Length: 410
Ligand SMILES: [Zn+2]
View 1 (cartoon, rainbow, N blue to C red):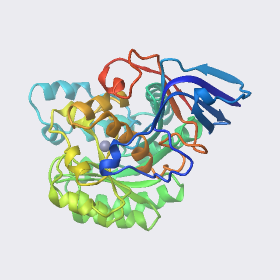
View 2 (view 1 turned 135 degrees about the vertical axis):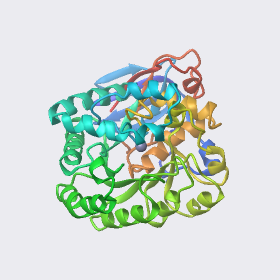
View 3 (view 1 turned 180 degrees about the vertical axis):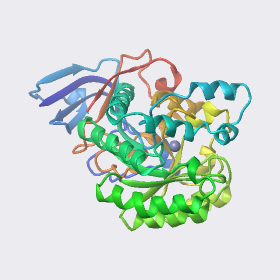
């Protein structure tokens, strides 16, 4: 099947054949090669060629799309989500409006434990149907690859149920999906006084089965004071590494808890959240391959302070952005809204924000060779916008709240 898009107002993040970009860091994050008035040809889902309309060769195509007034971009890579969950938590949303903190709600049995109760009560096929509907919805706003975590089971059966649902999504969805094993999301109620018992359950019972069935690509831990401390995180990550699972961890959301440093020490693909990042965390990340991933949607929804994106970028590091789509702290998987938050609250430029959720998102899922930029030989995993009032990169984060994505091509 050959798909030709002509008259594209702006072809964004398009690389030449000699480019060897695998991520963009520091000042490079402002670089985004764009081609005005362009065409692109995809063959059997792979980018075959592209160029300026003035040089459009005679090509046979099965489908031709007129891109007049539209942008074509590499699809968003959302590298951190909890898209598989059983029920919304709008009741807690109201509790927070009335003044309860996220930690207070968690201590009362809300938060993650609330999601775990609901998840364990739901059968696998219903969980799959709900999750597939959410996946379809985020694809409609341009998400072309996604990571999904377990972590609402908090027991062997529940964690396996979540990971099997993710596996079914992988098998049936048109986009790449990666899965992370996050049994260390919170201590379940029955292990509140026996934390060692829960760690042993994860390491001795869950991990062998999860790895044996090939259900996870990554090992995740919620490394935070009041959840899993640095020594516990280190132990869990070392246990995961024995099964070949690289870490992708939750770090430094609430405190300067040492999560970034333990992630770097354990060769994490990414350390995610990073509301609390100072000089020590920047120093730890410098020279490492660990991707700093920021989740401003959660900071926005919880009314917390935002991640210091400028500090990280100005230190020469890369920044990745992801939604953290989950029922408690960020019930939205909408990447265009994430771009607006990155620009207005984190003071990232539109180029930086779009690099953060395309090529750097791909790097955070080890998919940078096939996704994240428009390059001959990469997957034709593309966003086609609607005709825009101003066909510029900046228009997407500027025109917030309006859906400017016409379709995902994948
Ligand atoms: Zn998360």
